[in-house]
Image (cartoon, rainbow, N blue to C red):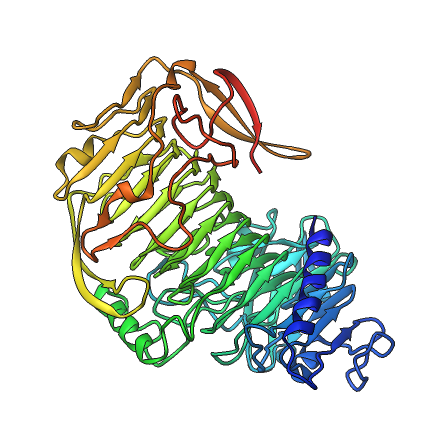
Length: 610
């Protein structure tokens, strides 16, 4: 599938460049080959460069860097911006596996005792940044500050770090663990490889903070396609600090990150985050983050300069904090068709920024058709989620929560999603929220009726702060949803109006007091599960045929508005009505099913969903 995407992208890119280049200008291709290249070469197919970084120093708007098969151990830090019509493209050669790693291979291991080995690594291996002298730290980190941003991998599987040498050699000698101590000239790494000889296997250690990340902000219109990027010593990434990832945009505009595999980040895989300043990790409070936003506005936080990124068809996995994250930098962006899994599960460190997708201020963003599973926290949208559309996503088997909306004022449109994890969802203390045609298995987090934190609301479809407001519960709409577990009675006590209609409750799920045209099937004992098979992911479900009944098609204009910012749910790019289900099938206008899928019949179901 990726090969076809790349072929199509290459053809369309070439056509657009020919049509948009100024008269007399000519974009060119640069080829890179780890095995046959030389950085003094011309960069042609016959005389390729050796490193992607060298190509990044030569490119101009419209140029394409084609990277051939191999392992590239480097940090690519582009400095030249493309333009909207003439982006700079970095892409893996068609049909070739290109790995870009933030690690170095280590072979000089000495056997000490039982399963324990020692490597002495010269600090010159790391340059100016030593991940084994750098610990996880920052705002809203709750535990694990002893952990380093370094990591040790055996055959592409991360070992677990331990806090002391004694716990490795005495208490954990039969477990795959590591411990490190950085000296003046040498870093000492002890590791248990459990029967494997590290001098005969592939053992790698983190050596660079990022793999593809500009050193400076405002490097715009970069496309990155088709790479395997992994093993970076990324830092904890709170919303108040710069947010490097394995790959990240670093306070810029117009990136396209697509068809990549991003894995084994100490903290975050893909970042659409803020710049760094002297306030990094010094603003851990609601008032402190308001100050962060105010400073960002002085640093060109607006649609002209920041955001409008596209992140699509990537697989992001094995990250300690988040799969995709960004504070302020994800405005007007599209996050679609990504698979995000195995995020935040090791629990060596933890804080209030752990999720599959974690955004602050995803203004007018589209989060569509992503598959988020086996993560610590599903999708978590925090502060200034305004004009945001969350649609057709599939979430299941997430450990703590599927979905969280924290202290937002909306409007936030959530439609046609499968939320199938059985944990809590934090949604009651965000306002201006509309849930339409979702299948929901979670319970609502009982968070009271008001959050006293005063958070910004913005001008509609912009970033200027119009005011601050606390967060009372309510100003929510629920239409045509299928609830499998949720108790909606906490909405009876909301301070702002709530409208619930045409929903279906099954099993232990309970409706709110003032619902209209909703139904309860308390005898339901079935379940909805997502299972993996060789050709994809399937939904298996027991469906009661009585759930299908007269339900009006919901129109976006009927949802009203978010009262605090005074902004409607309607905007460019949002459908006028909800006539299609999660899979793109047309809904029956006379007698429709509740939830995300328009079933063909009742009974046991098995439907391919991703």
